[in-house]
Image (tube, rainbow, N blue to C red; front, side, top):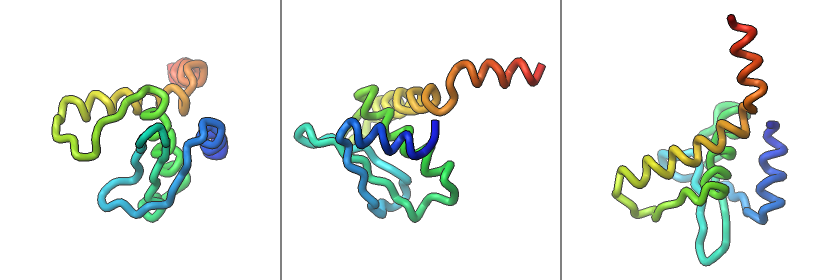
Length: 107
């Protein structure tokens, strides 16, 4: 999936995208009183692929309802929700047929 397609998904879902310099993180999905937003730290992205992967993961938090409070210290909950969001992003970024073709080409 192309980067522009991910931005189109966010627009379709009415998820606002903000450029926000967040120390030590590339992105964050926020849901507050039914307002959805994604904060991206564009200064941290070395390439468009970094931006694409980060945006896909943050959309994964939205689609998988994989959220947790910003003040959360429960490492198990955080890891579980991050896993769910990343899993969604992998399915979007690497469609099964593409993965299957790549594996078959390698053998």
